[in-house]
Length: 456
Image (tube, rainbow, N blue to C red; front, side, top):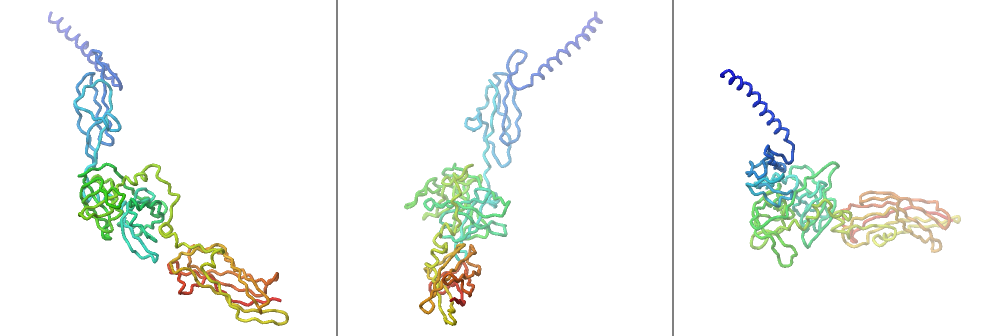
């Protein structure tokens, strides 16, 4: 009897062992996603977690009707976990614990950690720059701030910073060379903003800022710019006092705040504590608070298809279009007199000989001009010899220059009737500096020549 019991016991162990292995094997084979069933035909469902760049969270798989507790929060550098949401737009939050009735995917929502002043300072070191505004003599006459919104150097500043600029440059901290502001795309004096572009060498990319259109009273903010022509950018902290502040005579709804700014801060950044730009630092108010132009006014420039830039102009052409003077054959005598002086003439053996000089003087208005000389200027000059014969001279320029700094020489084609005169000469167009005030009180030569002609 005992022997038989022992034998039975031994013979039943493999049976139980195989049964356990079979159950484990069946369970392991059911690891595919989707509805699963336990041995009692209860379906099993899965919760998948999308951490949106955070640390991974393991899936939860439980039978239908199970109560599921909230898993351990994921982590993400420089962000605070806000919670799990049922949709990719992060609108409907998950309520824990929940009863599992179907397969689901939850999405993590993150809020960027509040940045300190030092972190804000470093964040914008490649995005915020000082603007140097120059006059016609290329002397610095005003300073402001600006910030980059596109990798190609497109930037934003206040309109009042750029007004009356002849030339302008962007000066980044820790960079040796300034960047010329080569284009003005848009200038809105009513809302006090200008969109322009920095000129950069091939391959250079800039660091654009990020923006946010969400803020409220009490939101912590930072002003970043160059107050009082500071050598290096400055950061000051404050908070929003009013989201929409109107001023008599202005069409701007300012973001009123108490982050300190001063002269030179205009055109800089008003950022929230997550490093996203919400406004353009602009003005101070009589109560000691400050105003920023809402970034919403220019938010279309941050879209994937921003406004056209085909109507771009240089600062000189945009703010001083009247100073660019194009000289051509039709208008040259409106600005320059051409004086031909007959020095002497004689007749011998049927030949007439005349000695002459040709000069010109500026007769335009007393103002600064950037002269552009046309590629072909022709002036017909007639010299009367002994009151009976006329000799015509056709003065033709065959070179073009973009600025009046080059000395050129041109030939004089002399004709008497249908015969070519035996004499020839050269005259020069002397362009002078493009920073020179062309005044009728002084003499500015554009044509000068001398020579002798002879004909029957």
